[in-house]
Length: 107
Image (cartoon, rainbow, N blue to C red; front, side, top):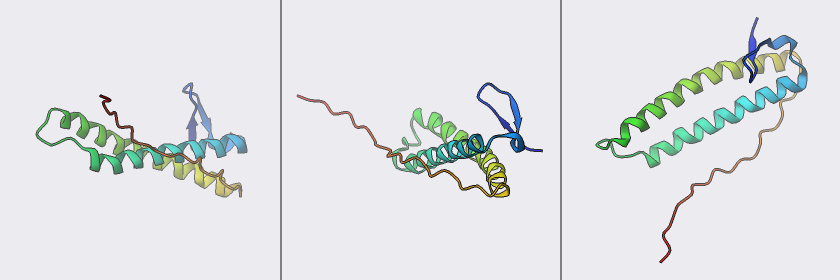
């Protein structure tokens, strides 16, 4: 039996989730995977130089993102399996535009 862990830490069997809860959970996990993928992609462009102190923190954050991604993929697969079993249609992803904010000094 597979379990979904709610925000307050309660374990809920996936089979007992309502259809709307299941679909919203799947969309949430998918959104989080997208955000992690964006972070990992952008990190290759904006990574600090390896000879700086900031690089250690950057490397740790990147490694942590890969661990989170792996765990989320397992959860996504579990939810997707249940959605297919119930013959449901997933909710469309939210449209998010990631923008890089650049501070400029005005003279």
